[in-house]
Length: 88
Image (tube, rainbow, N blue to C red; front, side, top):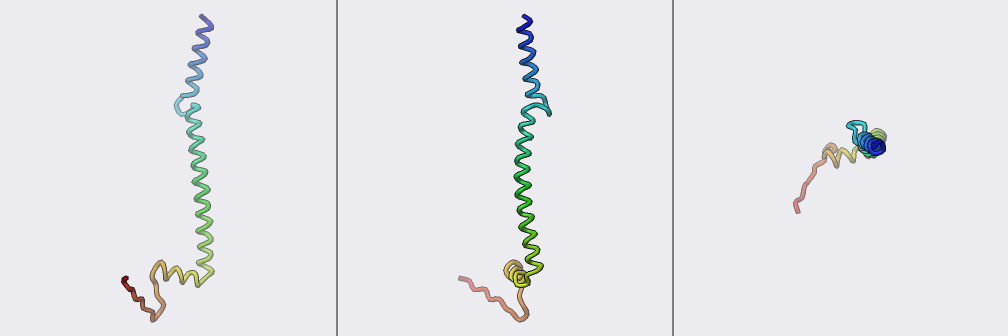
């Protein structure tokens, strides 16, 4: 009888530790997965940040590149230039 009670008590405590709200093993596993996902997102954002930083430096130092961006992205023209759009 005592052995059976002890086994049930151990089983109950084990299940409680696995599923305890906010602190159980399942919550720990979910938090670990979320941490991995956030670390991956952080690495992606750092990569994008570095790329944008390189672009800023290029825009600040390369006048020809800046002109190319102004013409293609924003449709800006030099003085006395006219754009003719031809429809196919």
